Image 1: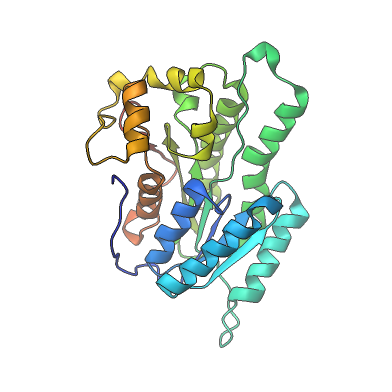
Image 2: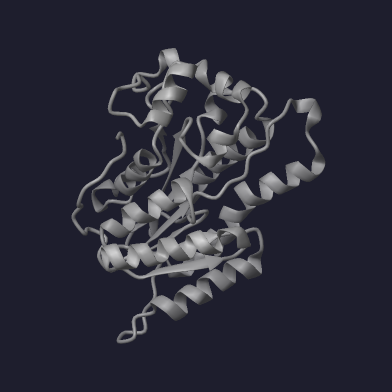
Length: 287
């Protein structure tokens, strides 16, 4: 299989990470990677339908990696709900001996997708996608700010998309929100310079529910970049599903674990001299 497996040094021992949209898919891979390195995690998700998967994931992480994992269903587009995430985390993770509480890592992974030509855009969809993809990270980071480290050791990672760079057709709303994420990255790296580095990554297609459920014409639009992407060649070691889609569209999508691994690298202590950047996470066609 092409995913990344194996034991890792516990370089995040005792730290706390908050990852949005982390009950499944890329988000679940992110919290597992961090937990495998000793990090306690907050598994944030938005809908009742993810209650079970979040609970199962939390149990797995606690059992396999001896960390604490807290699933919290909350809507990050609400200031009150963001405050509830923080208050719940304080109850669960405050050091009983020192009374201290710190959020070391925030990964803004949660996002919704709207596809369609510009003339089909609905005002309600505009408001919804900008609330989740842009307002949510703003409100949540604001709620967490006073609990970030004060020595620049904090890490904030934003998930942008290659779509905002390549101008993928029919993604006016989605690409617009990701462009906003990249702009906020550059602002926050200055506002939060004494607390945390702030960087974005820009994945291309990833083997997620969002990608798998997209119609073939969307996959074909993304596939236009495959001839320019060095790492998309399908190999015998890839999963059967990845091989099938890769051969159909001229190149494979990323594994969620590959994206999670890059995010974890950005969170490493050694990554402390990089901030305000958009880091390529798409196999090579665009930075």
